[in-house]
Image (cartoon, rainbow, N blue to C red):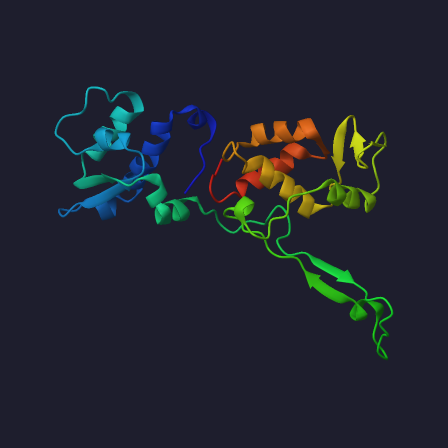
Length: 242
């Protein structure tokens, strides 16, 4: 698995789909150059016509696709199409990133002292506090997770109350603090930030890129170091490595 960078970002969809096949065959040639051949499975139907084994190169295949198709002529293989919704295992394996530090802590410890509960002899205040673990939100499809909670004005107001507001922040009629007309989100409330990022990234428009996601959030919210945090969040998305 990898990430497109530089001029690769300007490639067409079919070029981005074809490159991993050529790259894998090139790197694994010591395993794939064998008399019995092998099978290639892909979820892009047009690649069947580009890479279909034949002694002639198709006339419509040009540029990068032509070079890549000629590279694969050294191999004995059969290419088959699998529709995207059915290509589950290959999709998960290819898109799962390595072990990276999450943007927001998946499990948050919250301590709350029970009013009127006597502490035992020798027990400190911290030990007497009860510990509550917030439910973990899935990193694969977080918006569909049963534990996902949509942020509300009350949740935002509560987060703002626990933080020191920046200079220029004003409380509006809806009870929340706004900075230059945008709702101020404290930097230390990782859980709230994570939920806002999930909504902006995994909404009805599909999995947005970092630039579009940051632009949408910037119109509504005042978030410190927004671009850096969005880039880190998108890198952790298991369904799209941007």
